[in-house]
Length: 94
Image 1 (tube, rainbow, N blue to C red):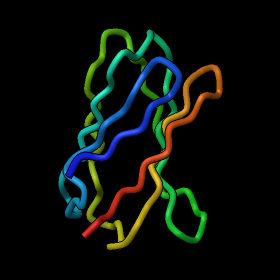
Image 2: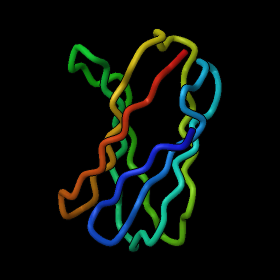
Image 3: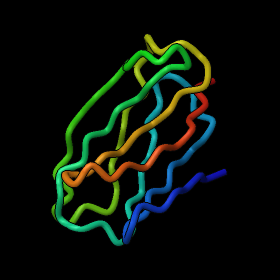
């Protein structure tokens, strides 16, 4: 099941969710302006377990590898643009 959230004029959808370790999480962007997005993944203890920056110039899809070292559980995926607008999505790693 894809999960989505809307941020001002742009949206993000993720799949597959749940996802297995070692697989790639796909983040689809809709109506996203040219900006820089910080992508971070947080565990339920509030610790950041991954972070990257992506230039969205014409991008409609971002692939985020789920590393083998990730423990199964529920995580929060945050997408933050240059204007500090944020989308938060729940990700389940199986």
